[in-house]
Every structure is written in structure tokens, then in C-alpha cells.
Length: 298
Ligand code: NAD
View 1 (cartoon, rainbow, N blue to C red):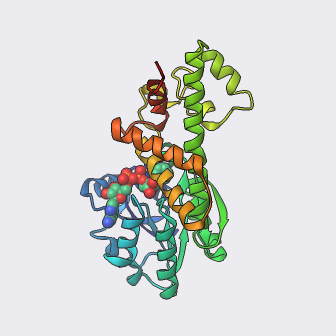
View 2: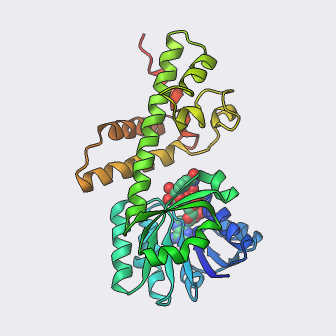
View 3: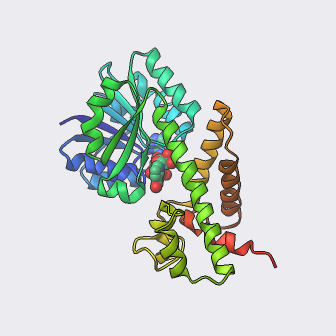
């Protein structure tokens, strides 16, 4: 049993913290929105009164916050969680952040002799609830070994991504490809529809042929093809278009930082930006099919 602080009890952090309680850990949580803290408390998480209050005396401190900005503020710049934890504490940031923020928190931890792991997740809200997330852990190998049982209380798999910031780097690569493949899937559907091909035929052929991918086979933008797809419930997420825009924007920041050239990633980003400007960014990102359809000429 470990003492675990959990900071950020939203869509992901709420169920993740409750899964830690279910696994027998002693969890103290905090969210700036009181109802979120209360909801986690109803699941057995001890309610802290502030982020530093949650973190003091913890063996592990998890952050699951919206962006790198909040992560920097909570750990270093405003709440200064790094200044209240003991030298043996392992800090784990599981938020999806920009590589600049990850480098910053790794450097600040190193300055204080603290151990930090960047470990974003994939698997979405359903995976957070079910405890089937995949963690991508970057940082000190011995610390990752120590944290592994804690990760596995919230997920089905932990990938050792490499050194500091490697977890965020691999996450941004995966999600850039996901955004591109979803746009491609939507274009194939719009082209098939325009050419008079039946949805079922499109699905049966593509999902079993060389065009198959998660965007078609699992999160299919066409309704009535895959039982669990958001398209069957009017695109209730799932994974929101707004979060996809966030991740594609992070991919382009990573490309700029590293010098990598990713023109399709930039194109997918601009399409999701247009989607979120003109439509409801809170619906599932597979609703991109509606925008691509509406772009039809003539
Ligand atoms: P969310 O907005 O539901 O949760 C974030 C929580 O952080 C909110 O409850 C917010 O009140 C809280 N918060 C903000 N500032 C804070 C502060 N200073 N102190 C304490 N709490 C604070 O977002 P989410 O969907 O849970 O996502 C969290 C992270 O996980 C994001 O980085 C997101 O990109 C990533 N992610 C989300 C999904 C998904 O499907 N939702 C999937 C994979 C990764």
C-alpha cells in the first residue's frame, strides 16, 4: 500500500484516483473545482484542502491536469508542490503536455534532487473508468520500476518509453497519427458516399483490407458498424474534437522544437481547428466526417 496524492480529479483523474483506492492505496486528492474533489471523495479518496496539502508525506504524487501550463503552476510556479514533498517522493505527470513543459518540470525536479516521471496515457475516459489505460513512462528507469505497480492499478499496460520527456514524445507521435488517420478515414467515407458505395460495403472492405486502422475498425465515423463507436450515439465522446485539436497542436509544437517535418500533421491540425471554430468541439472527433461531407464540391 502506498500513500498517493492525486491532483486534478476531472474526467480522467477522478476515476483513476478511485481505481487506486480500489487497489488498496491510501489516496489524497485535490481539484480546484470543489465538486470534482467531492465526487472523488465519494469513491473513497481523502479530500485535501489544496495541492500542497494533498502532496505532503506522499510516496507518489500524480498530476492529471488540462495542459502544461497548469502542470508548471501546480508543481513549480504557484502551488510549489515540488517544495513540499520529501526526497523519496516520485512525482508522475500523466497529463498530456507540450515537450517544453515536460523538460521544464524534469529540470526543476533535478535541481531539487527529486524524481519525476512523465507518463501520459492512452485509452480515454472509458479506459480510465475500467482501469485499462496504457501508460507511456519517461524518466529514471529505477523510479519507473518502483511506480509500475501503481500504474498497473490504473492501467493494463506500462510502456518504458525512455529517458525524461520520452513519454510525452511518444504520446504526441501516436495522437498525431490518430488525427491524420481519422481525417483520412472520413475522406474515404465521403468519397465512397459520393461515388454511391453502401456504408456496410465500405466498412466490410476497408476494415479487413490494407486501409484498416483504429479510426475505421473501432471508432468508425459511420453509425451502425461498430457497437461501441460514438457515431452510434450522435458522436457523444469518446475523445472530443477539442482534445484532438490540442494534441495535434502539441505535435506541431514538437515538430517545431525538434525540426521534424510533419505536413499531414499540420493539415490535420488545421482541419480540427476549423471544426472546433465552426462546430461543437465537445463531440467526438470522428464527427469530422460531417465536416468533410459538407465540404463536397457542387
Ligand atoms: P479535465 O478537464 O476533465 O480534468 C482536469 C482537471 O484538472 C479538472 O477537473 C480541473 O478542474 C483540474 N484543475 C485545473 N487546474 C487545476 C489546479 N491548478 N489544481 C488542481 N486541479 C486543477 O481533463 P481530462 O479529460 O481529465 O484530461 C486530463 C489530461 O489527460 C489532459 O492533459 C488530457 O489531454 C489528457 N487525456 C485526456 C483523455 C480523455 O479522453 N479525456 C485521454 C488521454 C489523455
